[in-house]
Length: 193
Image (tube, rainbow, N blue to C red; front, side, top):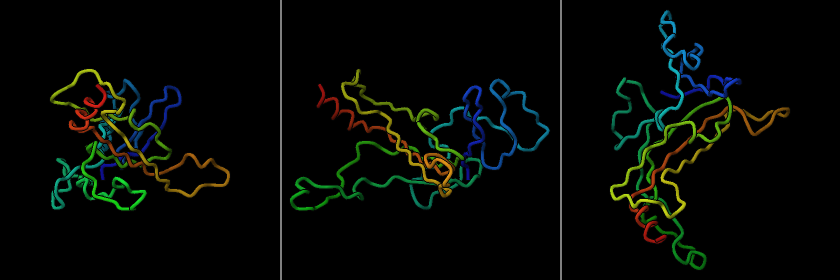
């Protein structure tokens, strides 16, 4: 797959570097991107800030091609309608009935699945987040809801050790990027004016 692995953290400048799966050479340092030796057949790529969702591919139907334009097999995903989720209906505490969700406030636009040797905090600051453009831009926001919403879950891949902290270690980071729907933005504008 086209996943990213953490390569190293340069302690002097705090630069977090990643490598594409299979790369075994050190990545070039800042400013050395064009001075990499071409004697090896393995290309070296430095990723300073990757595009959110570049480790997976969105498909529209189950039978869509699951390879990118370079022919690399990708982990794929597709959006499901909001109605497949059951949510608490009005008066749930008295009648305990759930109903299909009417619509979503945000749309899932990208997903990343990243393995690393340490926890990756604040993933939103380490990727280029999706851009949000609204056709009828209401101007200045009068609400606090973000235009881009990121949910990131770290799943450990090794058992905790008795002598080591359990708050960090190797794992898989599953990050989902959502953008606000235009309808949600218009509702927020109406209720906060």
